[in-house]
Length: 132
Image 1 (cartoon, one colour):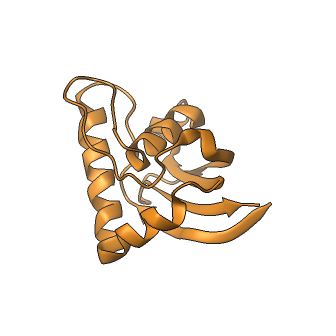
Image 2 (tube, helix red, strand yellow):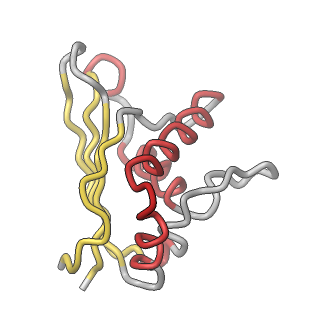
């Protein structure tokens, strides 16, 4: 059951890439987009999420021709890494947003993929709730 809203309806106009050079670039773009949207509130969001059971809802809006074969778990995994402490497990790991620092506390993830026309913007949005 959803509890308090910890972070609501953050929209990002970059679709996560899961492999290759584009993966690193997309992670950095997403991290910066979220930081820009949160601004000075990022520390408050970190504090509100720390140590609490969480529910995360993610909706992807993708072009039919290019992303119909992208699996939701891979897309979601990339976002969860960005929300975490490190965005990769390599030696030169990029620092994440440190919002979800313990993935064991994620109790529920709701994923949705909607296909949009080629002239529409590819994007995704997510919200984080305290899980009751």
